[in-house]
Image 1 (cartoon, rainbow, N blue to C red):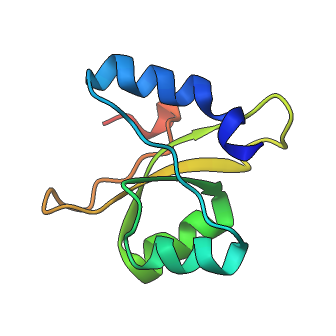
Image 2 (image 1 turned 30 degrees about the vertical axis):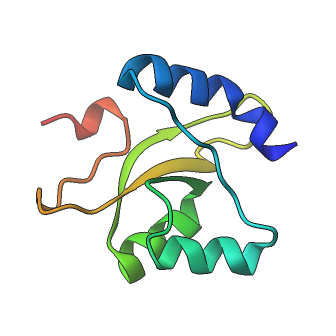
Length: 98
């Protein structure tokens, strides 16, 4: 069910990136957390507080923050694995624009 909920995101990313995108998750939270910490994913959708842990503990960078219609405000965020591009961080809010 979780992966089915993100099919529109998959379609959008495939259209924008012009390549196939595979959605993955783990069988349980511990595995998901471990996979995130080990850099097993290219992009992660997770709760903000877990995203912060991923940022501090494993070098992930927040890309955007969004509010899903069925969730509480700012409860989810996208993270990408840090590359050699530097420490740029943004929440998707206009006040963060540089």
